[in-house]
Length: 180
Image (cartoon, rainbow, N blue to C red; front, side, top):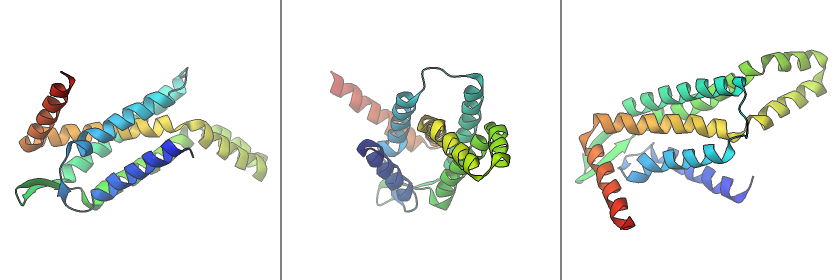
């Protein structure tokens, strides 16, 4: 694992753990993960996408969007000491687990035939096939699922809470003023 991937993994773990305790809502939680996921998805895209990969991608995007909607629906937004706070709780963590498990299930479904064939061929061939399936899957598919989830999460919170709308609008105005 290279240094950048390790740093990104640590950031994602910190952001997930932060959802387990009440914390002040900031723009990084709402916009940082989607931006990071866009960059990681784009950086890992293969040169050519065959029909199977596109179907797998669509399944993962749907899974991610459903999980993001569910996570946002379960997130509590409130004021504490005049600061806008939120807590995703264990449902947020469970959503990440569902995305990971769903990714593994979808990976096996789309590679089921080759896995079964190699299983019958023997232990060594089966092990080699499992390693090949996971190594050729690419982390961009995982990041695309995170992208769909985080975008849906932000959109749902944006739609349901005017305070979050204001926070996002203020952040975009600040960014626009810096560019001038």
